[in-house]
Length: 198
Ligand SMILES: [Zn+2]
Image 1 (cartoon, rainbow, N blue to C red):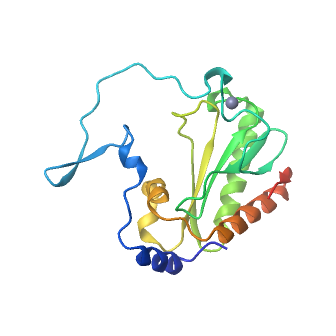
Image 2: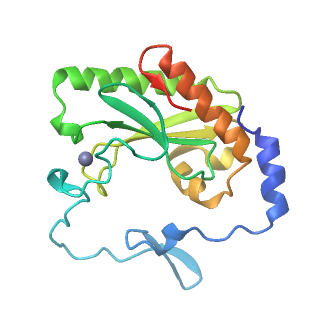
């Protein structure tokens, strides 16, 4: 059971001012402080597309059997977590084989749709979760990885498209609660097939 909005608020209040997350140092971070106010960075000039990590499956970090953080898998797909972060749950849904989103055939696309709906439904049924955002960006690694970000119910700051930023800003909550939620998602996903691994 994820923390309530009140529990998170009390925990974060006790920490005082939160430090700026590392995304503020990324070159794609779009904001600067100019004359004491937040302003957009100048648009960078056109440049060739940089190769993504694991192009054509070469040195791909998402190919392989023994990846850390896998909580569920079947013969074609897996769900994994990354390092615990500020939002209650952040999961990645990935094909086991090396495919990008446009590479999927109709059957794989149908599987992706079904798993996306199941994951969203399971995550949104957890106590104290207000929404599960799902998205594919894919500018970093070529191997398809769909993100599922659970945000807390009743905590207005973390709503909407800035929830990934809050995932970096907020300090992680109790690890045992996070692990219990991971296990619950894996268990419920496995009731439809595949294998829970936590
Ligand atoms: Zn790959």
